[in-house]
Image (cartoon, rainbow, N blue to C red; front, side):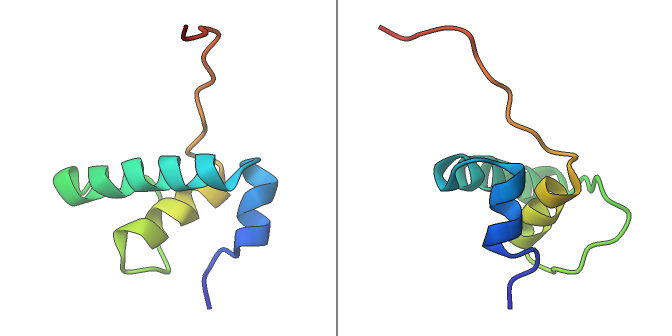
Length: 69
């Protein structure tokens, strides 16, 4: 079973698209830099670690005020 669950993650981030985008970017950073933010992780995989960071509130979406035309 996935920890944290998708339902719990969607309480932190409002859309599945944003969740996938943020977690994939963070997982890629893990792969390159191996710089953990949390003290301990339950998951051994990079995406799982990124999802745990999102659930803990240490990763957030930066909203842009700019509109692309």
